[in-house]
Image (cartoon, rainbow, N blue to C red; front, side, top):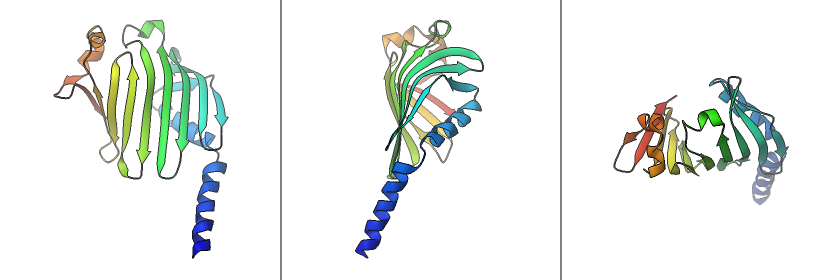
Length: 171
């Protein structure tokens, strides 16, 4: 019985290490293409336990709207995380969105299999949220800040609540 558990653990570790994590990225890229959002010119590095993507241009249809400095996918069995850092929007879109996104993390664990937790920080301040996988619903909570007041288009998409400013959408 002890050998069975040792073999099973070794098999799981082997799967994590040797599966091509770049396929995970290409699947995510294909899912984003349905919203006409594309990453271009990126450098992909498949590591033992994670996948790094660096220096990507962010395109909406064929128009460049910004750049992404770094994306890291950590695909483990019980814990999965995608962290995006250094998002800067191009000049045409800087009037629509706050300065940029320092980092945002999407975390999925087997402890909470029906939700994906979201945390982040950017020109808009701190951000918390979740994706409800059963209802296909995204909820983001922003702390009100003076910076947010200077973006009326963004504020029109948010509603006030006791916790802060909330953005909700279904997909």
